[in-house]
Image 1 (cartoon, one colour):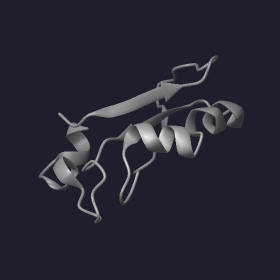
Image 2 (tube, helix red, strand yellow):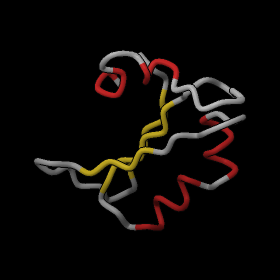
Image 3 (cartoon, one colour):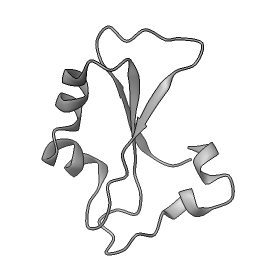
Length: 79
């Protein structure tokens, strides 16, 4: 299982079909630093979107675009 951070705003209302926003942290980064550096929780909360934010932990602080377990068969599905 791939480590990840999931968040939904106050007032989130589950529906039959739900929306997801997925943020991939990119080169030389990790989940903790992007949440802080880009204020993802604050931006997501202020957006008022009825959705779930998912930030998967890719290779920690890696100098490339390798997707780690997400590149394996069914990687995104298993997320």
